[in-house]
Structure formats: structure tokens, C-alpha cells
Amino acid sequence: MKSLLVILLFLVSVFLFTKCVNNATAADPRGRQYAGAASCRQCHQAIYDSAVLSMHFNTTAIAGSANIHGSFTPPGNTFTYLDGAQIKMEKRNNNSFQVMYIDGKEIDTHKFDVIFGGKHAQTFLYSKGNQFFELPLSYYSAANSWATSPGFPIQQPRFDRYVGTVCFECHSSHLETKIEIAGGDGTSEETVPGTLIYGIDCERCHGPAGKHVDYHLGHPEEKVAKFIVENHQLSRQQQSDACEVCHGGNSKAQLISRFKFMPGDTLANFFMQFVPNRNSSQFDVHGNQSQLLAQSKCFRRAAQMTCSTCHDPHVNASNNVSMYSQKCMSCHSEANHNFCPKAATLGESIKSNCIDCHMPMQSSRAISFQLSGQQERSSYMLRNHRIAVYADSLK
Image (cartoon, rainbow, N blue to C red):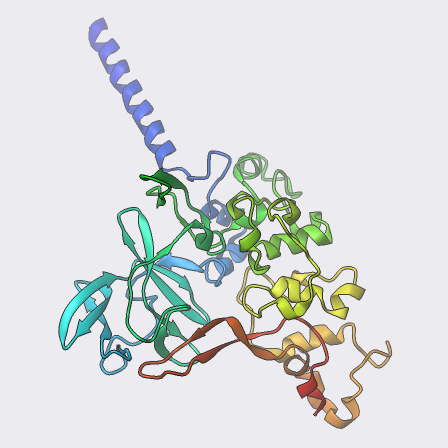
């Protein structure tokens, strides 16, 4: 009987140990100090439920039939290249594919695996082994059509464009890679399976939440946040850096992976030639929003102005220019003697839209695309975050 009891205790111990190991394996790949975004909902339900629907949270996602924009029905699913080759968007066995045809014969086929972006455009990746490659066609909301992915040619399709970690650093919260050294000077980067955390999650902006969650679950009466970084705790520069790590366009001078950036860090430690106040003519409306804002007189003169003055990162940026105009007028008024000099001419309309004049939509120099069968490139339009008086607005 005693021997049987010992055996039973041993089996229970093995079971518990195995369960612990399995839990550790299923834990957040960033480490034990992370709790995972879902844990935030226990106390912050409204904020969490809003955030998970935002483009920040969904700036990368697993590709599925429900979240791929664009037509899969003829003729809207077909793109024709200048050499006559075609790519068709097709559904097969509950999966989505980009299929290349030459003279009507299927030549190459790759599945939609990962989505980048969402509101303005979607670009797609397929996986091969432990590497990701960009699919040649993207979907652009403004054109409501499939068109060439950024940087891809119109002459003929290609499926060999490798996507490395640096792209995931601003479109996901974590991805581990390993470098394989090949013969000669060749190296290759491969991702570690199971380490990709899609989208920008809570802990990417607020830091590891493991201790925070444990403490507050054990002390529910405590209303002051412990062991977590809140935006108001940061200096103005630290708040700007937290946004500019992805909205500053600094990848070419990178020293340290953006995945290592924690709220409260300074970007000067992450980029070899980080210059926060370069001339705005060098900046693009895509990826340089933070640096463009820094050139604005509004930003330089208003000591408390940050990105979150106008944007709540837990929700999508609104298309409601009237709402943003009201934010402008909280500072700009006739009483403060800094109101728009054209107010008398524009009348009440200025209260509903000063944004289009002082933050106009402009073409990105970094991103353009070509529609099926067209040789000219189409512009990718985004709002310029340099608040200024533009020549067109004076007409």
C-alpha cells in the first residue's frame, strides 16, 4: 500500500511538472516578466476592447478570409502585368492565394499568411520555411483595387522579396530570429517559430506587465497603478520617442532592435545618427509623422503638446476633421490673438475644418503603386503632420 502511495505521488508530481513546463512553453515569448495583452482586460475592459479593434493592435494579423480586403471575384481579382502575365486572387480549401498565370497556365502559387496594415492599405506575406516573403500585390483602399506592392515592378511579377525583422519591428510586438552563417560571407536570417506577437499590443507601449498584474490582482483595493509605465509619467521627449520609435523613419541608422525599446527609453541610444530636428523637406508623410510634427510652430511653442494631444492610441485615428479642428481652437482663438487671419472670409466653416489647409493630404515619396495595365504610378496619400501655412491654402 505504501509503495502504491509513493507511485501515485510520483505520478502526480510528474503531471504537475509537465503542466508547468507546458505553461512555460505557452507563456509570452518575450519572457516571464510579460503577462500578455489579454490579461489587461481583467481591469481595463473598455480600453482593451477598444484597443483590440484599432489599427495599432492589428497592424499585423494572420490572414484569413474575413480580414483580407479586396475582391476575389472576376474581374476584380485579376491583375495584368506589362509582359502579359497575370496574378489572380483565388480561394482554395478555405485559404487565400495569389496565383500567377502565363498564357493561361498556372506557374506559381503562394498563400496569404500574414497581413501588414489595414486602414489605408494591406500588404501580404507568405511563409517559406522559417522566412517571410512579400506577395507582389497589395490592396489600396483609396483605389479600391489590387495594385503593385510598394517597390514592386509593373513589368513582371516576382515572389522573392524577403521580409526581415526590421519590418516586423514597427508592425508587431515581438519576433525572434536567428542568423545562419552560410559559406563565404553569406548569412541568412530565420524566424523562430511561435515567437511572433501580432500587432502593437499593450505591453509594447506600457512595458512588461507581469508584476503589475500580479500585484493588482492580489490588491484589488489599490487604485494607483504599480509596476507599469503610464504615459503621464514620462517626459514630453520620452512620450514623443515612444511614438517616434515607429513613426520617425529612422531604420537606416539603427543600432539596436526596436523590439528592445521600452517606454522611457531615449531614441538617441537606438540610432547612430539620430537627429530629431532635421529639415522637414527630408521627411515623408509615411513613417515620419513624429518628426514632421516636431517642425511645427505649434509643437515648439506649446510645451505640453505631444502626439496624444490629438490622438488616442487605443482607438483608430478619426477622419472627423471637425473634431481635430476643435482641438486646434482650444489654443487658437481671437482672444489669444492667434486665430486664422482668413476667419472673416471663411466664416463658421473654419470651425469645422482648419485641418485640410494646415495639415493637407500629400503624396508619399516612399510609397506609390501601379494599377493593373497602367504604366504611370499612383500616389499614396497621407496627411502631413507638419502644422503650417501651405501655399495652396493662401489661394
